[in-house]
Image (cartoon, rainbow, N blue to C red; front, side, top):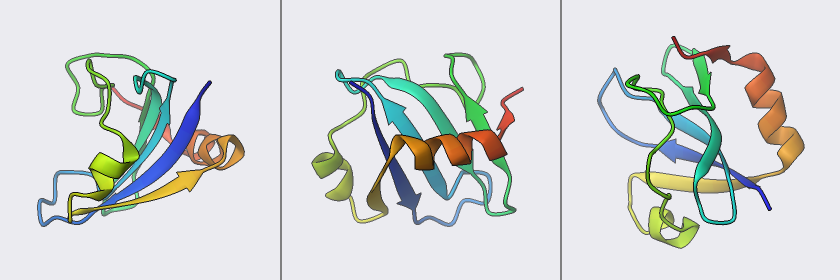
Length: 93
């Protein structure tokens, strides 16, 4: 079963995304994700590659573990909410 969430990432690095939108499987492996950058760009991917916007090769931490880190704020999403963000994003190059 797939689950979806958004994660706001509070940091000062202008090259890193500020929102992460995630679709993960039951084992917490990323299936699809979208990075949102400060300038409004939405970059999506559904594959592992050398790009910054690549899927993780390891399972993600649990939502509780992510939320325990002060720089992250997690919000659950429905599949439809994730799909709406995915549809607005462009493919990672």
